[in-house]
Structure formats: structure tokens, C-alpha cells
Length: 140
Image (cartoon, rainbow, N blue to C red; front, side, top):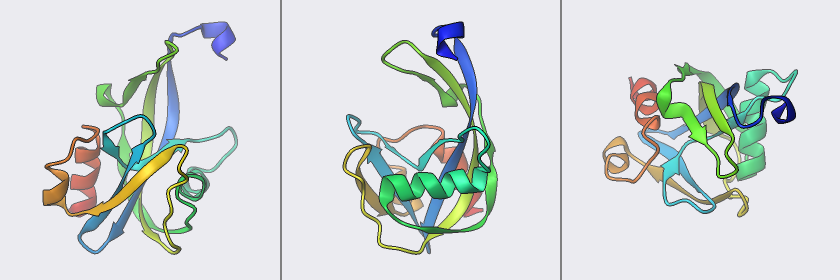
């Protein structure tokens, strides 16, 4: 597709896992970043979004999840990403409320660190700004 459109803005469907344990939320840091975020990724062609969020969590954390609901759908300027190679992507992500059913282990390649944080702890972290909307909806 990039051969046809170059680096132009491309809108892509995504999924986000809001993994919760009581009042704590699981956040992660990607390789090469000091910013905390939620686990997620793109939906592959022909893939159901719920299957995509389970796949992303399995790939990045080695854990299975139980989906307990949909938190919401999010997009907008805060989900536009400019990649180092010049590609521009605008994600529209469906956020799923989840519980981990296995031990969580970062893959060490894409995800290098994870942590459980309360809402007040998250407020003090360097984080992706869009996750505030998702976490506020998940906590409501």
C-alpha cells in the first residue's frame, strides 16, 4: 500500500487492551521510549478486533486475557503517529476492558517494561496523552 500512497496519512484500525487489576491499570514502555502507554496494535486484514487485542497481548506480554467489555472507540489528533521513516498513520482504536489470565512477561523486543499503576500514580508518569481519555472512561 505504501508503494502506492508513499508516506501520506493513512487511517488504520487499532485495538487497545485496558488490563486492570482492581484499581490498578497495566501500562507498558516500548523499546526506545520513556513514555508509558497501554498495550495495543493494528487489526490485521480479516481479523476480528477482539481477536486482534488478544493476539497483541499474547505477542507483547506472553499472556492470555479475558475480555470483559468495550471501554470505547478513540481517534483524533492524539492518535496520529509520524514514524521515523516518514510514514504518517491516524489510528482509530477500540479499547477493550481486560483481565490477565496468565503471568505477564514483556517480550523484551517491543515491550521492555510493564507496571501496575493507580490513576493517581499514572497522573505523575510521562505517558501518551491519549491514554488519559481511555483510562478515565475505563474507571467510570
